[in-house]
Image 1: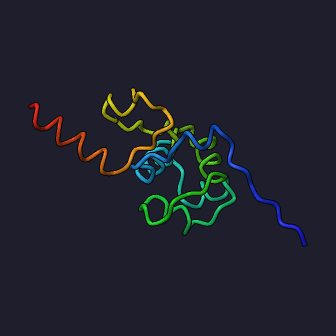
Image 2: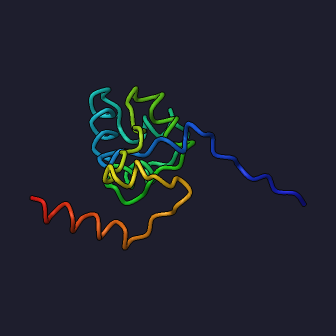
Length: 115
């Protein structure tokens, strides 16, 4: 028996779920004057799942996120927040060098000492 692995598209790997997804779902549902039951029918999902989502007790999978975004006309996925790294680590003279946690700590100490 063969099982297929779902591949994550490059676009999906650059997006992340917003932190306040539960509030956004609730507000959108209420603004459209939908009950949990009505939204459940539109999405073909259980009411208990919707309630858990709104209370942040469950994270939606990609399939459910797409359905919620489409039906409620909201945005739940945003680009990944870029981490800030010291310029000296980004502009290294040796591009093949990997940076360790120790390198980051030393860089932070140097920047704190110059303040």
